[in-house]
Length: 338
Image: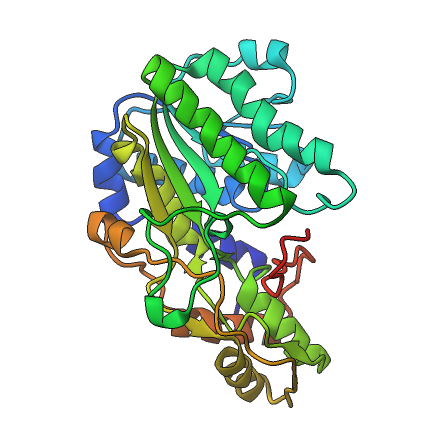
């Protein structure tokens, strides 16, 4: 039976390949913006791998930590939690030196009507951090939405494809990338751009959003007919292991699952598993936001959790009374409005 504790346990169980790569990463690791949807489980995954592998390394998690429970759970696993506002250079200056940084700080939802704050978080905060840590190695969270919409037959956007961000959120995400690229070119900072498409953790994610509509018998929009996604535990593992591939010039890496999934077929599977009827609205467009993650697969292997497993887990999570944390992905959005 799924519970929040079981979900955390599954998300934070390290693989042997993560343990071996952590042994190769020199020095401690700091996760900036660790209080969001992925940060707590990533921090605990790294801490569990260090414990299991007998590795001498510290994991720092930096956030304002509005969620006291998340902080306590992390600290119980050996994560060193540090409270700091990354919009404040003085608070950043007080953080410890660290050679390896996973940069997760950013803002997406609420951009419409709050564009200045989004640009401040996504373009100014990186400057403040880089002024303090320009000599560290960075894995920088970005988004597959910086690419253009592509047809499924293309196999998804490649790292070499030109970017075409639509709307101020994705433009500010590209600004974040450009700030790191500037510091890489100017100061030699080693960086990997982690262009992630849709992490899944049962409490939230594209599959969860579709399942919620199925349960409520709300018609499902088919405009964005396809999507990529990856289990959050796998995405967290890839982010930590990507520290080995941070480079100068900057390396770009698409991170998502290997499958291109259909919205309609996913909804039908969930409806069958949940014994519900499902309906649809809109006409499927010829293109969607899709990434080709073959480079990540070649470097770090396929995800441990398949798409089919995620769908089955999602249905069982709902049957077991699992919560929906009401942080929709807005995967239906095609015009960059968040």
